[in-house]
Structure formats: C-alpha cells, structure tokens
Image 1 (cartoon, helix red, strand yellow):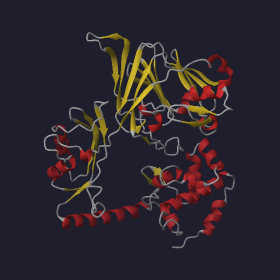
Image 2: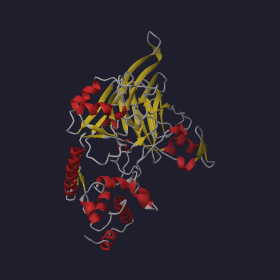
Image 3: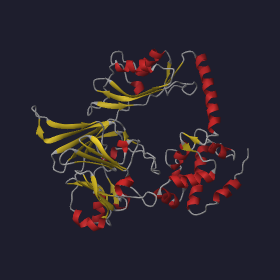
Image 4: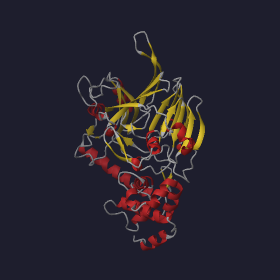
Length: 480
C-alpha cells in the first residue's frame, strides 16, 4: 500500500489545547528496528482515527527464537504507536529493547499517554513532554512545531514512490526533508521548525542537547542514513456497532437491543429520524476474530437497562468476516440511530416534552457566564481580548498575514468552528444573543457569519486598531 492512499482530515491547528483529529481509510501496521538490529517494535492500530492508543505493540528479538522456530517475544504494550509514511509521526526503540519513544506534532485526545512526546521503559510510561517542553520553545513568542518542514519549498512534485526535488534544492535542504528526526545509536536527533536540534538520550531517558543550531553540526550528521519504520496498511472496514450481527441468527445488534428494551429502533437513514425524540446509546469497543465484543464504553439514556444490554453483548458471539485478514481484532464505534416507543402517540408526547426542555435549556444558556466551564464573552470586545489570551504566536502571525479571513472560518474546522462550538454560537449563549439582538446570525448559515465577524475584527485588532470594535458596535446597534 502506497503512502499516498492515506487520507487525512486535519482541523486547523490553532490552539495549544485544541486536538487535531485525523482519520484514514487505511490503517497502519509499523515495524521499527533498534539501531543494532537486535529488537523489533511491531505496532498495530485498530482504529481509523489517529494518533490514538487504540491498538497493541509487541517488542520481539530479531535473532532469538523459541522451541518452534518463532522469534521470541520480549513484551507487549497495550497501545499503538501510529506511524504514517511521509507524515509527522516518529517512533524509536533502544538497542536493549527496553526503551521506546514516540513523537508526534499532533494530538487528538487528552491524557498522559497522548502528550506530544511519550517515553516508555519496559512497556510502562516513564516520561512525557509537550512540544514546548521538549524543544524549549515559547509558543507565545515563536513558532513551536516539533518537525522541520520544507516540502512546499523544495519539492517539485511527487508520484506514488518518488519525491521530485526542485533544481534549486541544496543537499542541506534535501537532508532536512528526509532526516528531520532520526535515531542514531540511541540518540534521537530532532530538527524543529526553527531549524534547532534537540538531542534525546534513549537509554538515559533525558534531553542531552537543546536548541543546537542545525548549520553548526550539519557537516557531522549529513552522511547519517536514518532507520525508517517500515509501514504497511490495511483497509478499515467501517462496520458500525449497530450493524454487527449475531452469528447464530444474523440479527443486527440494533434489532436485538430493540427486543431487550421493547423500543422501536430508528436508523439514522429513516425518514422519521428527526421527527421524534429518540433515546440514545453510546457504545464502543473491540471485536476479536472469535466474535467476542469487549466493551470499552457503554453509556445510555436512563430509559435503558444498560446491564441487560451489556450482558447480551458479553454472552453473544458475533459474525467476524468483516475483520481484515491482517489483524485479529478491530475497534468499533458509532451507534448510529436511536429508540422510541412503538406507540406513535407516546413518542409524540415524549417529543413535545423534549422540545420544551430544549427551549428552557436554550433560555437558560443565554444568561450563563460559563458553559462547560468555558468563559463566554458577553460582547465583541471581550471576544477579541479572550482570543488574544487563547491564541499562540504562530496563530496570530497567520491571522495577521492572511489576505482573506474566510480560510479561518471553515464550516469543517478551524478557528471559526472552535468559536461556534465553544462560545455557544451553535447551542445558545449570551454571545449569540448579543449578535442576534443586532440582527446578525439569523439568516441561513448565520452562525458562520457571527464567527466570521469575530475573526475579521480580531485581525483588525491584531494589526493595531484596538478601537475598531467600537465603530462596528455603533454601526450595528441593538435592533430588538
């Protein structure tokens, strides 16, 4: 499988606390060898979103075998180290096989093992670093990205296997493109976005060099050939939890639960999906090749007896022909659909109650200072001052250099989506009321228009006009 088959969906990486979600149609299986070639780290991901921990990794000897001729296993780690060819992910294993480091520019989930840099000893997490900690970088004053990236400057084009460098690309440029991070005899060399090198001792588990100027040591490292992880891929099956089937009667899980709870299942594709109040289930976990489903998360509305559902899943063997041959288990999620009463009149009454509850909740949100523990600005001026606290140096630089604010206000991600989701534009808040009172945001795609105003005004603010918001507010006075 060639690396150009990997499909990535990136959110704009604007905030230090914003996790960048990515997904792929093909999922990696990587092999990483120690510098001395004595140990191999095999890492298998079971999910289509990355980077995350949903997988397994195995450390084995490369030159020692058990009694039946299979390479001896050293130990196992209950997580994957997602590596994709040509993308900002790196892992290395030490010459004694006991230490592993994983480095990624992007994080998707919160938690200790989801830091940018994680370091393991004998399969257990030993140290973690944020990007700023590892490369000694101040995100409020400079661009802080782990890996140096000059692809746009020196690559002419590429086919599925070969990069074509521009004639103007120097040997130094090409080295930086190929070797921005590598392991040399248990010393990790990492060249960051500032062209500064961080050295990490894989055996001792500590940083032994920081902010070293690349040009000053290029002559010493230019002939080093980095050991790359070998990566293969399998096609993710996109089997949703609702559709897994009982191996005995072929009944889908959604239908089996319907019988258990005596409620009618409504598929997301059903024409009445948005007509009635639906009671929901969240379910995710691992399906192994033997047909057993290991529940990782099961959350239900109070109408369900979750113990009955969990017991059914635990005692049922499911069909597994959809599991790719390359792996022995797969991570499944997305319980698409919901349940309602079989009696339409009962369902209608429940729907009316739900609409009233939502109206009351919406009215309450219009007065809250915080929603989900996030401060909600009460006017445009506070939007600008809050953004100035949240955004880092590189984010502000990109905004100031932009020729069009639209690129930051995408409906699919980025700063605009963050504003809409976190400041209650998409669910009701005092900030939404502030704009609606000025007849802004009530038209189709009006929420996008609100975040667009905030972003465009913030760009003006960044460029030095700290009073422009007053002019805007005067031109858009309260009309209600």
